[in-house]
Amino acid sequence: DAKTTQPPSMDCAEGRAANLPCNHSTISGNEYVYWYRQIHSQGPQYIIHGLKNNETNEMASLIITEDRKSSTLILPHATLRDTAVYYCIVSALNNNDMRFGAGTRLTVKP
Amino acid sequence: DTGVSQNPRHKITKRGQNVTFRCDPISEHNRLYWYRQTLGQGPEFLTYFQNEAQLEKSRLLSDRFSAERPKGSFSTLEIQRTEQGDSAMYLCASSGDLFNTEAFFGQGTRLTVV
Image (tube, rainbow over all chains, first blue to last red; front, side, top):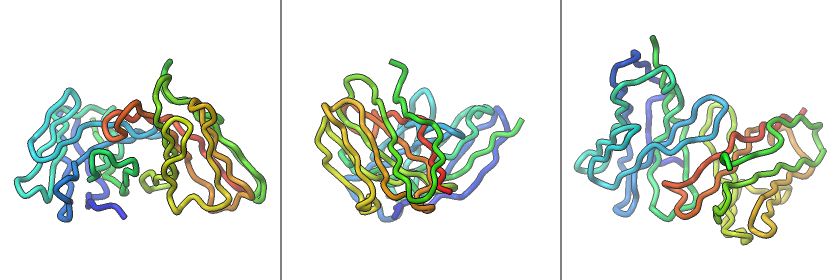
């Protein structure tokens, strides 16, 4: 069973920031928050991960609340190619059994 | 090397037949994973290899499923006596070290059992 809760769908205007929320109230101290995305007809793609500090890379930013019970993935300037299903996962670092939930279907509109 | 390769991309089979899928991981990746994905759901873990050793198997992997990775290179996933419930996308991923930040997925094999 997935340990996260995400809205099933969201829309975002092209060029605007997309903020994707995730609740993970039962996260353990050794578990990280990971984000993957899956574009139609492709396999999942790693985006970013974090433990408790906010993280940023070339794709996105990850904001984790101080109590670690929720997080937000931010795509700063969404493009049409960012339309995908976004998965929020909590997992220990060396876990080989990543549990994907149903994710959030993000649609970026022109 | 352009990434994880899976063959075939699509497979239609009659119920009761056996099917085999192949996954060629990224060269030098010693870890290989199989996942299954049904429509509208996220991928579900099936099994994991480190080199040629199969180290983890999900309870989803019934007796009809078997996976191999001879010589620690490519891997095969076989489903015997297929059932309609086996219809899904079968995804393979590989990583050189940790799955969580370094795994790369193939495009999957879509199985339809009729």
